[in-house]
Amino acid sequence: MSNLKSFMGRRRNWTIPYALFLVLFVLLPLVIIVYYAFTNIDGKFTLDNIKKFWIHPEAMQVFLYSVVVAFITTILCILIGYPAAYILSKMEQQKAKLLIILFVLPMWVNFLIRTLATVALFDFLKIPLGEGALIFGMVYNFLPFMVYPIYNILQKTDQSLIEAAQDLGANPRQVFFKTVFPLSIPGITSGIIMVFMPVISTFAIAELLTINNIKLFGTTLQENIYNGTWNYGAALSLFMLVFIGATILLNREGSSKAAEEGTLI
Amino acid sequence: MIKRIFSTSYLSILLVMLYAPILIIIIFSFTESKVLGNWTGFSFKLYTSIFHGGIHHSLTKALWNTLIIGLIAAFISMVLGTMAAIGIYNLMPRAQRAIKMMNTIPILNPDIITAISLFLLFVSLGFTQGYATVILAHITFCTPYVVLSVLPRLRRMNPNLYEAALDLGATPFVAVRRILLPELKPGMISGFILAFTLSIDDFVVTLFTIGNQGLETLSTYIYADARRGGLTPELRPLSAIIFITVLLLLLAINQRAAKKKL
Image: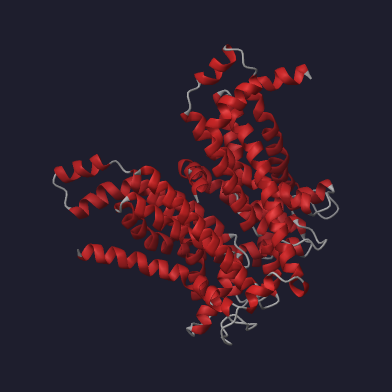
């Protein structure tokens, strides 16, 4: 007992329970994905699951399609969200805070219910369900994740830099494109990380908005697990993981910022 | 002036678009029709029938499960995450970086990858899926956020206070309780709220770890409903109530914060 006391008396040892937890519930599961990806049903080593990517390219086609949808969604989120974040950053802080809350609040209604309501709205306005509705639904769901990080960085921008640009004779447009915008790029990157990946891997939203006509990669993953083809599902998950890992490595700073940004939404 | 009108109308249009579906849910919670979008006259019936057991028993049960899982997962995440943050703060830089990196994995991983990896873990370990696995899964993706909301509080506090308490004869446990915890409380509370929100909002991870013993949370209940093609009408008033409650709470908190500042 006194051993335990002196052991826990050193504060750095307080990390140990969580470190063990992370190993068991974060690292080990990822190792298990790799294990399943390279074995068959009997647990024997095989590359068949990986070969299946190009022998039966349906899953990869869905993946590419999802990347395109995610790309369009991300671009639209930036185009729509940036001006909103910019306007918010110019407001009094108290008012801006209230509006930010209003932007984030819809997330409190379960997203499936919101999506079904969007479907009802489209029906009412006689807008056909399909690709357009899908993109709208995605932008609608993910816009707050773009507005918030951009607002956050714009609002912290050093005003003296802007004043300096003005003093040196830049016109408003130059001030924006040469000072404000470049300084806000980290905000955009964390927004991209918070929108792009999740869109690729959503499932359920796409089916509801397109009456089951279009599915995204998330659905492919889910179907494989549900139909019992766990090994192939694991291989596809591994593919996704490698894709995420590459994006994060290419963009270290943005990702760690995105992670911290996540705390605030 | 023109600029101002433009800004205001831009934000207003965006907000109207964001809120249109929610307004539809609220409006149609006051009618009895089975199908969303079909108005069959004003009625409070759906509101009263949420609170009557009977046919909608499964909905109330799902609601309770959601709240219980959320509270347990958020509480454990808060304790585990706060301890971890205190530990991380006192680690050597290299170990600190390693743990922090592992801590961001669940945040950056898409839900579905977390879900599949945990599903395969529970299957491999032979765990029966149910309450325990859902709570463990929720702790997995909630705790990183608690760590991230407690760490800044530690960085902001005077590191000598704790040592001073020890020098003055406090045992480490007393020093933690009397010195550290009061300073960390705001971070712990916001971590708890965030964890609770994430937990009750989660759908994908829950779906994969809930098993097939008939356990349902609100989100899996809604998913099953949506797949059958319709939404249980009582979900409309329920969503409306949740939404309005959160709206009022946040506005009240914002008001109070504004007053404190003045």
